Amino acid sequence: MVSPTDSPTAPAQRSGGRRPLNRYLLAVGLMIMLAGFLFGYDQGVISGALDGIQKTFRISSLMLEVITSWVTLGAMAGALAAGALADRLGRRATILLAAGTFVVGALVEALAPGSLVLVLGRLIVGAGVGVASVAAPLYGSEVAPARLRGRYVALYQMAITIGIFLAYFADYLLISSDRWRVMLGISAIPAFLLVLVAWPLKDTPRWYVKRGRRADAEGVLRKTEPELDIDGALDAIGQAVAADSRSATWLQVFARQWRKPLLAAAALAVLQQLTGINAIIYYADKIFEAAGFQSPTSQSLATLWAVGGVNVVATLVAVLWVDRFGRKPLLLIGSAGMFVSLLVVGGAFFQIDSVSAAQRAAHGTTDAGILALVGLVAFIASFAFSLGPVVWIMINEIFPGPVRARGVAFATAVNWLAAFVVAEFYLSMVSLITTAGTFLLFAGFCAVTFCYVRWFLPETKGKSLEEVQTMWSDPEALHEAVTGRG
Ligand code: BGC
Image (cartoon, rainbow, N blue to C red; front, top):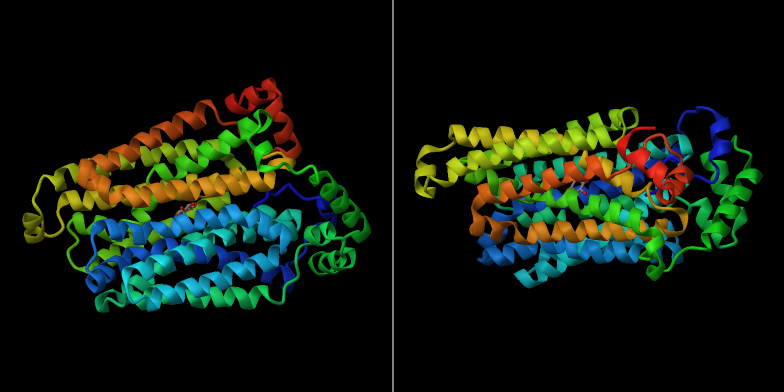
């Protein structure tokens, strides 16, 4: 993803004024949303499928963790490969490749005769999601006019949450019959839709110019912005592309010169995951079961609304606020809210854990169970208007030009790696230090996030990419952006 201001054609576009969206731009928006939707559906769907999978294959909890989490390993590899693929094959072809991979993976999952093939399917699906998670926002940000670019990034996160919600809905509809194969296989449909939407689209003007295909670039610009000074825009893209030939190698990305933005992006990517969001997204049904929701249907219903629904609504709040209030205030309020809610969830589980499973089954939902539910809702809401979208926005705006593509791919891969660690070890952590202990650990990472944002992270709201770039090498400007004092 690239920031709203990162456009070689921005000046010409700004003078173009406001115009309604044309069909081509709507199709681009739809494509980005379908890619985000796939990401989200895949994050969410496993929560309701675990029970059925366990019944079918009778596997250990370690194997269940592998089935849950290896999708993120595939995604990490996919994200790392995506930058090079998008440069070589083009952004559009890379998205088609991701969608095709996803269809294959979903079918392998749905038809898996045993748990190992299921794991293979999860890896393939993950690779598709990982490639799409870099290529689709990149495509959108290079095609969208500057005035729409921020909204396209927000749309992407919004689509992730809608994907999670609909996955929970599918879980809810199918849970009583344990039809986990349908739950997993059904995601081939949006992947197929993604192919249909992406097929007639062209590649991005920037990619065409890079390939020396100026006429194709012109064709796209005429579709997206007919009133633009096309020659001027093409020259601007040409200059930007020429400057990009300074693009750093992987080794240079890690050079001292770029260390500050790299560390900031990696810190945000890791903390977004270590504060526990996906433990809840993936294992929501199991958490609600432990909290006293007895039937699979009641667990699934709690997950659908308390996690899925709240996530969508609170993300909408971020879409409206992020440009007005800035990144840091949202991150600070959000991480503080997450910290307090996790203390509540931890406290509730301290009470719940002290009662045996048999006693819990006899009593059903208790006050402590309700308290855990309330805490989880508050946690999801706090995450959804802060770390959820803002981390992606910042990762895409803090890298200087030459390292942007690889920097973003690196941070995205680090995010998937951290998601993997959480998903892989969540159940083991619960048996080691109890559910209460695990949530308190997540709370600890929320405190770390708060401190990091408060004392180390610069504000980027309202800054052009050039200003962000010079800020990193100007200690005074950096200090001002971190402290908010000018
Ligand atoms: C995170 C995902 C998470 C989702 C939840 C995204 O920003 O990167 O890992 O599942 O938010 O809404």
